[in-house]
Amino acid sequence: MNTLIKLIKRYQGGSILLLTVLLALVLPLALDIFRLNLVGKYLSYGFVAIGLVMLWGYGGILSLGQGVFFGLGGYAMAMFMKLEASDPITTKIQSTPGIPDFMDWNQITELPAFWLPFKSLPLTIIAIIAVPVALAWLLSFSMFKRRVGGVYFAVITQAVALILTVAIIGQQGFTGGVNGMTDLKTIWGWDTRDDSAKYILYYLCVALLIFSIVICRWIQKGKVGTLLLAMRDKEDRVRFSGYDVADFRIFVFCLAAAMSGVGGAMFTLQVGFMSPSFVGIVPSIEMVIYAAVGGRMSLVGAVYGTLLINAGKTFFSESFPDMWLFFMAAVFILVTMVFPMGLAGLWESHVVPAWKRLFSPSLDKKTDLNSVSGMPTKLGTGVSHESI
Amino acid sequence: MSRFELALSVEDLTVSFDGFKAIDALNLYIEKNELRVIIGPNGAGKTTLLDLICGKTLASAGSIKFGDTELLGMPEHQRVRLGIGRKFQTPSIYENLSVFQNMEVSYPAGRSVFGALTFRCTEEVKERVNAVADDVGLLDKLNTEAGLLSHGQKQWLEIGMLLMQEPELLMLDEPIAGMSAKERDLTADLLNRICKNRAVIVIEHDMDFVKRIAHKVTVMHQGKILAEGSMDEVQANSDVIDVYLGH
Image (cartoon, rainbow over all chains, first blue to last red; front, side, top):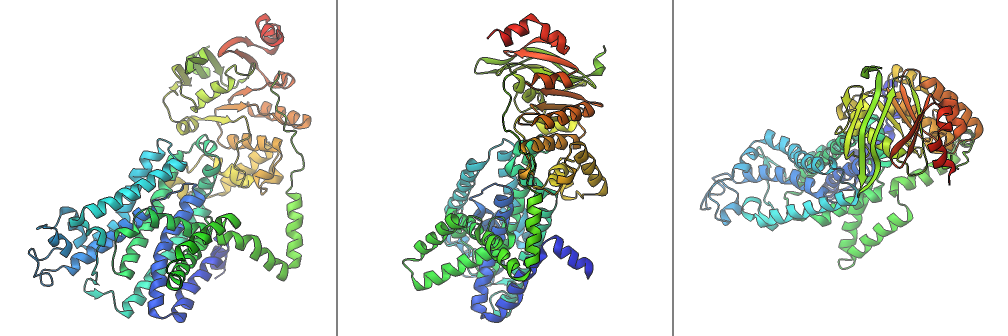
């Protein structure tokens, strides 16, 4: 028990526990299944947001194309479910029974080879992670090894988001086109649409999300986390300390992609369809907003940010259907201008100190003393001696 | 002197930026256990030379051998792993990390992604950090955020970070820039201590400081070597006097 408490303290597990209680106990008790299912849908975006905390907050790499990896994971799941929904008996009225309906409408008579692995659930689960990671590796390897970064990288990721959307829409016979993949019903005969399934999927989503946060927190607290922060600020120093900077960037980009892929799969499972509108530029940028509002240095903050923005989106769009986009934009501008470190930053700078003042005035004095002794005692002259 | 005893041999090294030869067919040999100071007016190519050795700038022609290994064409991090450490002109430290973390990150283990994931800060690492921190006079600052250090302390921290790697060749670009007189004295002592088992190249302008540390001095001018020898020889050299005192 003591070691557990130590472990929680070391990894600042309190905030994770609090989030777990909120997601696993409070929300399921407070909300009906329709609303809870919506929360589950939002949480699937949370995977992308915590990936962005690692990638953008820690690694300093802004990607405007995380929707690509979310989409690939989501489509992988959807392809499996679509195949299961397209057995020869239910599709006997098609000219080629046994293939997905949209293929039949597009005069395709045989299942394309790249669809075959998605007949198997284990292969699908592997693909949910492996396909986004493979693309992320290819992209990041070719960019980071050539030291392309910053704005250029962001623009390229955005281009990839656009390319994938266009490809999905254009290849209607293979992908379902702009409508996406609909009528997803079962996994190995288990109906994912009834209430009990929705509860199970919600809890699966929460469990996977908390698991991802724990992994990310572990990485942050280890050497890789320190190195990511170090190379974000002083890339050359890290390079000239014997590290291949590109390798670490590739790693964190693949990590974010893997989590986005899982998020996409959870989205498909809980929402019951997947379409190109969750892949492109706009959703990718929205996902960056989630992380920015929550606080790009805080894993837990990113999840709250995701929930808040999506709840706001739902609320505004229900109440002010014409205006809600403007409200959303206003919230984003306000957040970045007034508290650039997001909700988590606000928490650290206002709530925590106020809490400390209220409950432990003695502790406050101690930190004051510490900060005084931590002040530089000797200040350099700052004059450089250029002349001999 | 056999080649084997050389820590670094630079031969016919040339680099040109748009036709301007910043380093022009330069030859330089550094022995093991030597502390060499490179001096020269601004724009002589001193920093460029260090950039070429550590891989920050790519050479146009020539050869740089570290022991018997050719460095040209090798990525920067591999040169570091061979045992080459470089301190930059402005202190290049991780301001948001603690002094301890700065040193820990510089410890030469867990340099691959997988290695870093499984890296543990063992007692051995802690002892090494403490020993080096003691050496550079930052033992009482281990938990201070590096950004709060004074300019001189930042310089020491960066030297300490290099010492963590136990480099065979240490290159310091203006290590006492921005230091007080007392800090300079301490730095001179430090450099005299740490040049024991390794070759050290220092770029410096402060002549009193150079006198205190240099085994041998190389004077650079317009990408070439103008003179080389002991401090007294160099100061008596008429070419050197022309370049420095002539205008």
